[in-house]
View (cartoon, one colour):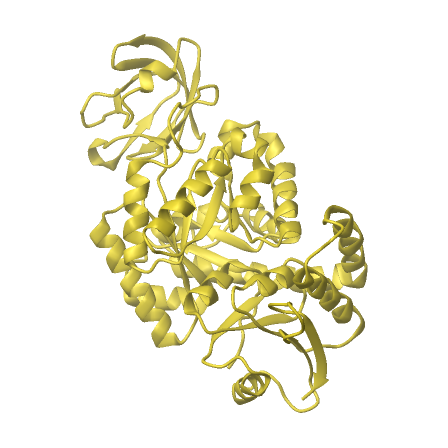
Length: 478
C-alpha cells in the first residue's frame, strides 16, 4: 500500500459534471478525501444517488472517503432564469422581484419574500459572490429597481448579498433540518452549517442530530461578520470550521480577507479542530485545463497558513475538468508541504510550542500533553510514522494540528470516526477490529508501510488509576 503523496485533505463538490461512477473513482484516485454534497442544488433523489456512488467507489478502491452535506441556510438566492443565465450590462436598469416569474435581462426573481423590506434607495446589492454589483434606485411593493454598477453573467440560483442588511431569522431553517434528517438516514458523515452567527446555531443542529439518534461531525461555515465576532464561541461548539470566502469577502472589506483567513486558521489549529479553506481556489479550472498563477499561489498560501483541507466547488461540480482540478490541487499540496518542512524545520515547531503553550489552559489535558510531547520527539528523532489507536479521533487531531511531516496512522473500530478524520491534515484512518499493539504492527507490516529497523511512535491508553484514553507514548524500532 502507498499512502497519498499529499497530507492536505481535498474536499471536492459532486455535481452534474462529476456524478458518474468512473469520474468519482478517478477523483478519489487523484486525491479527493471528502465528497461534498451541496444541498442548495439538486433534489433528494440526486443526493441519495451521489451518496451511493461515493460509498461504492470508496469500497471498490478500499479508500477512506468522508461525505459532507452542505446546508443551504438562509442565503438569499436568485430564482430561475430563462436559458439558465443572463448577461447584465453596466448602467442598465434591472428589477429584482419576489414575484413568481422566470427571469430575463430586465427582471430577476429573488427567492426571499421579505427582500424588498431589507433594502432602501442607495444600497448596493451584490450578486454571484460579489462579481455583479447593483445600486437600489427605487423600492415598490414586491419590486426593487436597480442600476447595474458592475455587469457580468448571472446564473440561476446564484447568491445575493446586501452587506448592510440584517436578516431577522434563524441561520438554521426548517428546510435545513429536513436535509439533516435526510443526511442521518443516508449515513452522511458531516454537516456544514451555512451562515452561522453564534454558537447557538451549532448547538441547535447538535441537539437535533442527537434527538434523531444520529451522529454528525459539525462544520461551522464562517461567512458573516457575526461569525467572525463570535468566532471563539463557535469554534468551541463546532467540530471544525470552513472559511467560506465567497460570502465573507462580500460581507466584509475584501482586503481584510487574507489576514482574517490566517487568524481563523491559526485559532482552529490551536484548538485542534480542522479548518477548511473554500471558494474560488482553482475557479478558472471550471473552464480551463490549467489554473491561474494567482490561484496556485492562493492554494499554497492556505496550506502554509495551516489549513487542514482545501475545497473545490464549481471546479468539480459543473466544471469541464473535475478530475484534473483534484489532481492539480494534490500536486500543489505535495509540493508546498515538502517545501514547508524544509523551510521551517525544527524552529517552527519550537515557535508553535512556545506560542501555543501561552494560549492553552495552565492545567491541560493528558491527551494534549501527549500530543505536545510527540512533537518534541519528532523534532529530535527520525521517526517513520505516528501510530494512534483512537476511540473518538481526538488524539489524532491534537497531533495533526502541529502539521508533522510524518503520517498519523489512526486505528479505529468505528468507520464513522475514521471518516471524520478525513478532515484533518496528515491523518490516514484504518478501520480495524482490534487496536492492540500486535494487531497494528501486523497490519502495517503486511501493507508494507514499515520495514525492518524503521522507528515508529505509538500512542496508547494504559489503564492507570482513573485515567481513561490515551496516556502513553512508546518509541521503538520494527
